[in-house]
Length: 96
Image (tube, rainbow, N blue to C red; front, side, top):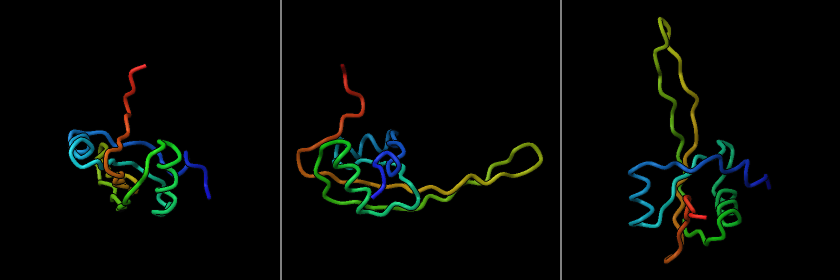
């Protein structure tokens, strides 16, 4: 098994994902493209000390952007939507 910090790259925080976390207990992460659902589940459980109920993954295709006269394609990346057990939550912005 790989290091948990190699599996989970960063949380995706937006209006939509914040609403998902508050209403449904689902959190969105950018993960390594080679990681599978079992590795993602184990990494989230170890890193945040929560029980994961479900993991959904998808490949987000990179957009084509214009840069001066040429076009550049951004790299593809993998997104994981993690559902937690009832009553658990992850606090990304802890007040210390």
